[in-house]
Amino acid sequence: GESVGLHLPTLSVQEGDNSIINCAYSNSASDYFIWYKQESGKGPQFIIDIRSNMDKRQGQRVTVLLNKTVKHLSLQIAATQPGDSAVYFCAETYDKIIFGKGTRLHILP
Amino acid sequence: DGGITQSPKYLFRKEGQNVTLSCEQNLNHDAMYWYRQDPGQGLRLIYYSQIVNDFQKGDIAEGYSVSREKKESFPLTVTSAQKNPTAFYLCASSMILAANEQFFGPGTRLTVL
Image (cartoon, rainbow over all chains, first blue to last red; front, side):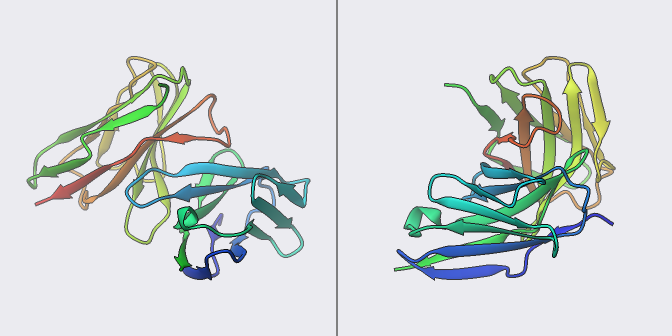
């Protein structure tokens, strides 16, 4: 069945380093892949999406990579800051959005 | 200030009681959604509405009910039939159904005593 999951539940990164958050998906027919950020006690916030016919998309300090061969999605955050501390969800859309379980990003001082 | 609001932020109820969670948006979005989030879990879709006076069951609709009488409002009722209602409930809206960018409210944490 459809599923979106993550390789690591928690990721600890030194402040200033780059962060890479990974996600595996199973539905080859998904149209878009999306990343959301959820800070503690708040609702998720859209970060960036990528269409299924692309393999890379860049935003402000973030890059999403899509590898359809191995059904893998990643979010790269450059120069990680304390404000990046959150849970990051990947999601995929076909006829609806399906969210993964999330990875917690912890920033080390 | 455009956005989506949920109230209350924390809600306690006794077993056997129905409770209604409020969700309001002033973004002029057609689509609205309710999700449930359990600790360490992703978001699971309870109900969604594409347009006023229309709503559809999501993946875990049992024990919940909704209404969409106004474009701005999409209240969720957690009924006594919901066996495990303690959770964090998130409301969201988007311009159209299944748009990639959904705007989420701050959530309501419901605890059943």
